[in-house]
Image (cartoon, rainbow, N blue to C red):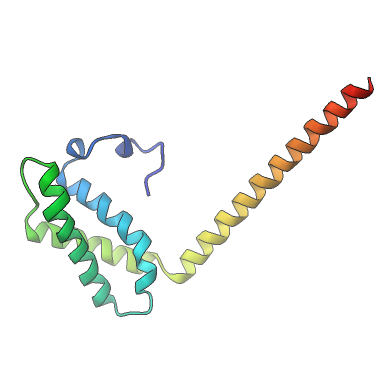
Length: 130
């Protein structure tokens, strides 16, 4: 998902355009949902991504933009791109590796915070002795 420093996040959907808005909406959903499809065939995943993109093209995109929804072929190509990328790059292994890295990062940050807090307490104790 886009970070807080990503300029796309601060723009409104209408400033981005229909393709980008639908792409961002669908890929965010796909990143969360791919885990439920790991044990199934890729064709089912491809169809689910297309169905999600088409449904949101018809509802969200059509309502947010004056030009209406995208054509089916545009939605199909967009969904196919997202489905293939997530299927290839978001595997169990990459998911577990990312989770482990995030856990390690959180543990390190918590440890540093505890060390800072302990040092601050020692400083207070030293000041009290003076």
